Image (cartoon, rainbow, N blue to C red):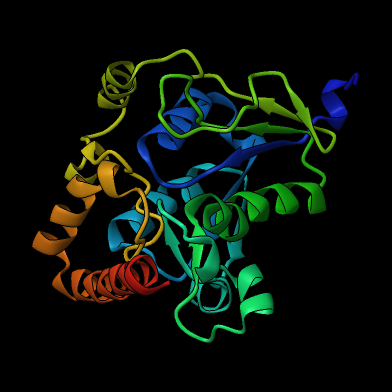
Length: 235
């Protein structure tokens, strides 16, 4: 796909985490040409909203996509790293089960965030989407810098950076706030029940700084554990 300068429309998939911030600062010289796309899940930390305001101020365009995580979870189930088949929405069609449903964390993130960004980029005619994905991340899509998805060129300028390089770069542009050192620094949903092995720092941070968020998280986690335990013991 060939594009002239005049028909290139730059977008930035912005989460408010360290990597998307690095992409923003890396492209600050042409930020006026970039439209930032941010998904509001309805479960945001105030720290994330502060980072969003940076992108809103710097970028020439800003798109806020509303994603109703609560309704999606009610319909599809709580996101989990372990998903007993009988607890999925699909299985309930056959087994008639009406209890707590459980869904894959991959499905939850894709429906509530990933697909929303992609569709917004398509709807607004974005030709090149800047993404903060890095190869050394544990959780990442198979897309690589230069790949074309749905007619959109993925631009991943920090794809080969390490976490340390991201922090070194950010330190040149801002006083790095505490929450950006959390493994899942974008803090998309304060009550996320997935990524258990990789989100303990987020849980501890939430417990310390946002006790009400932590209570909501703990209630959902208790519900998830009870549902899985019941299925394993009595399924």
